[in-house]
Length: 515
Figure 1 (cartoon, rainbow, N blue to C red):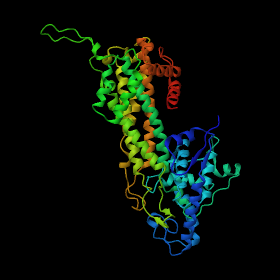
Figure 2: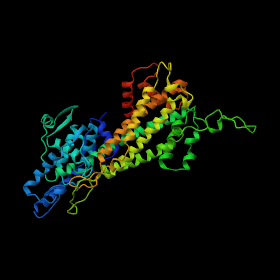
Figure 3: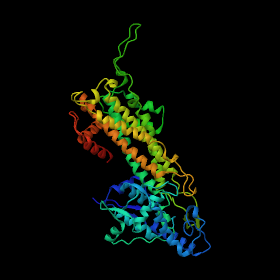
Figure 4: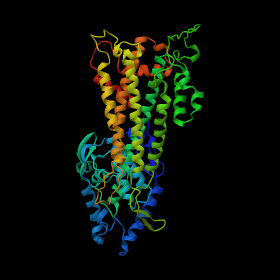
């Protein structure tokens, strides 16, 4: 089946299209002809402005940041752009995952395509070629403060465009110059402002943020499935997710989560109506104990109230990221229609940074919810139903899921440590020119980290829930959604009876849950 092409016009990129393009290795990226035409108009206006020697334009014929008061000669403005890339491609640390870099390249191209950055159409098509060939620059994780954009990390992308640095091509790490020779692609020669236009913006944090949002969608869906299954196993009551209850507190996320739960559990043979609560008539003046559960623990009963804010935050975060994907985020902005250069701060990453931090906090809370529910099922002193650690063999001799709980606990603790908002770690830099910064890329990378952690914890919880289903032998009484989840988990990790090595199976399960 032929893959659908993606055509950029600076207005139509969203998370779904971005993720789809990156996952479909053979779809082609195109640029609308109208966008190319408008870019050429803007570029010609920039050229004409430079011909007027009395025009001072930041970053084009001046130095950068605190050195903006240095006015350059006309024959120096091209060298300035290459110097900018070479001086800023100095990131350190582990390389950012390839799919994140590719996402950043796609976002950067889309913002340039809008036609307000003053770049030539040849630069647009050069970046388009890199994306279509899946030539992915090596971009280190450390370097950007997220104000003036992701300068250091985007500089590594620009470095590859001019034929320097290293790239991943055909799953191999190679010199960019060697790959370009192999593909008969000439290194790009930067024109006025083009170096600045490539690196001055929020495209790295936005590209990562888009990919993280897509993973968070899957994570939230799994959290709802796990919570619904847990409620079934405990023969929970339907009123905790009833429509009337949640209409009386009509937060959008809360009501939506409850609605999904009702759909998930509609054909369950285990969920109870509260009218069936087993009570013995009290005919005397004595207090009688009810030999039945009256209310579930909060981690089961308050699923909609805890995951509702996650739903609302994810929806808000996606909206912010998609606005940013289709925005002009460099400086100065070239307004050819009104014959102006607009100097400002659209490169400041606080919108993305704050959104990522909010999502990160919610993902950590989701992880904590899962870990607490797992603890309930593993601790026989609390649940009074299941064997210790859901051991299906010989407690004392075999250990069941005891080791896996350590993993879930430590992973949750790691996420709790990372939960502090990164955007509050502003440190003045750049000669105090950048005196309040966003740390947006780090915020996005840390949100990705806690999302990866959450998948591990929820995968372990899923295994625990399946063990509980096996112990009670209730698979056929589960709702269809829960049966599907049970089958999916068991296809990846068979029932755990005798102690065995689980690392590879758990790793496979986590990867498959993220697909």
